[in-house]
Amino acid sequence: MPDLSDRIAAARGETPADLVLRGGRVLDLVTGELLEGDVAIQGDRIVGTCAAYEGREVIDVSGLTLVPGFIDTHLHVESSLVTPFEFDRCVTPLGVTTAICDPHEIANVIGAQGIRYFQAASEHLLMDLRVQLSSCVPSTHMETAGAELSAADLAPLRGHASGIGLAEVMNYPGVIHRDPGMMEKLALFEGGHMDGHCPLLSERDLNAYVTAGIRTEHEATSAGEAREKLQKGMRVLIREGSVSKDLEALQPLLTERTAPYMCLCTDDRNPLDIGEEGHLDHMIRRLIALGTPVLAAYRAASLSAAEAFGLKDRGLIAPGYRADIVALPDLADCRARMVFAGGRRVTEAAFAARGEIAPVGRGSVKAPALSAASFRAPGNRAETPVIGIREGQILTDHLTEEITPEDGDKRPDPERDLARIAVVERHGRNGNIATGFTRGFGLKAGAIASTVCHDHHNIACVGVEYADMALAAARLSEIEGGFAVARDGEILAELALPVAGLMSLEPFEEVRARLEELRAAAKGLGVTLGEPFLQLAFLALPVIPSLKITDRGMVDVDRFELMV
Image 1 (cartoon, rainbow, N blue to C red):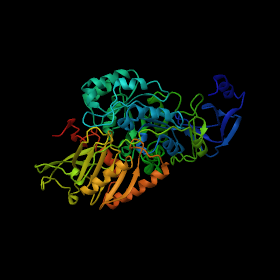
Image 2 (image 1 turned 90 degrees about the vertical axis):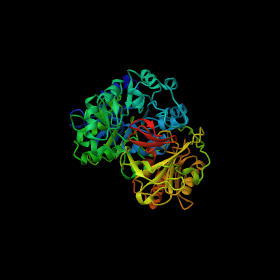
Image 3 (image 1 turned 180 degrees about the vertical axis):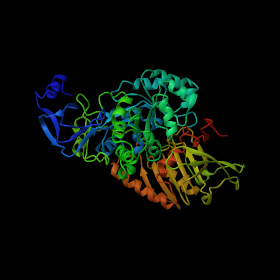
């Protein structure tokens, strides 16, 4: 970065700036006005606006409106199924110049090494990747993860330049009931930033959770829930991922009055959806199309996000701020013509010039040997709990169905849309296999399996034929993790994710192509869900109501206990 004296000289026009953007208008997120004049950049900082400047490089942005770079306030890069380097190449050209990530997916597989990998990667990217420290590894005591992280494990990870604070505190029962391990983590970050995760929590329990100093929430799924959380002092992050789609429900709450306290996030979004729809740019388009004021949408996408996370150097196009700038032909359409991240124009050449680091987490799938018999569901009672899927949400319904045992096994019933779901422990710790039922996939044949299985990332498998379930799940051990679709003893489609069983080593374009093949193969089995693989992954997350499954069995999340 140029020293302060050089920046002041460039700001006064005494010396040419490094870069001048000329001919465009700037959307001022404070007043809502469109400002005329050049934007002068020195190093990674804006040094001048609303005046004429000379620069060593001048770029004509006539006809374009300049807005601050977008900030994704909560996501898991691993859920994009590519490394941080490919994630950068995938979304930064869309205008995402800052992403605040929680690497708890990889941390649940390989522990602190996974967080250090993300911290190291952040030093080489065009975007500014902020790496929160994962609070819940594992998310609960009701699952088998590949690692555990205590407060003592997190303490040495603090102080990296990418850090802001503690990542989403998913174990909300642990907070309100003062679990000792959770209390140690809260104490470690007391006075700093702590992200929230408290679906459907309200009234006194919400008061208790917020009292702990937790200030953000991305799990609100209704306007009423979001309003109460705003009233309790939380910043509400509107989420629109590949599975969790809360934008339409929360959009009426986003106004110019509430925009300073609302932000945008994707949480979990894969390259297929990014390619077909976009990222935060897609959210901005949808919000404006639904009637959100333009100023409110762009505030939520940048300035409000920066202020919510204490990032005082970004969120405006103004002197002294980081030069994160998106040039748009049309504010309502929000399609980036040019993007600047930290003063660097985002181009393929700029991506090619980045440094690289070696991947981690290879050979992480250590599942037990599987056969068709592994997926039986023994029992002698017809009354059976069933996980009811809500498409577009990670909340599930706790259903009950009569399923009569046959020869000591409760069989899947495609006619009633009752599929077998199983979770297989794959970290080499105990070889657990748990089975249950789910409704909502629409499966008529075969099976699909995945090592993306939140947050413990064991093998999740759903199917109506046990032999195909065994084939799909076993294939994941052979390819170091990923997704597989099987039918009639044949693998129809697959995607290898050898980095901790979560991320590909291929370019995001290749991952997108494989996802298209997987989606088509799943549809051929009768699957009706738009995103069956991530929907499957969330059926194993025992911190989201109401009924889930882990390698230890079915979990009644409302009661926060394993079902016996």
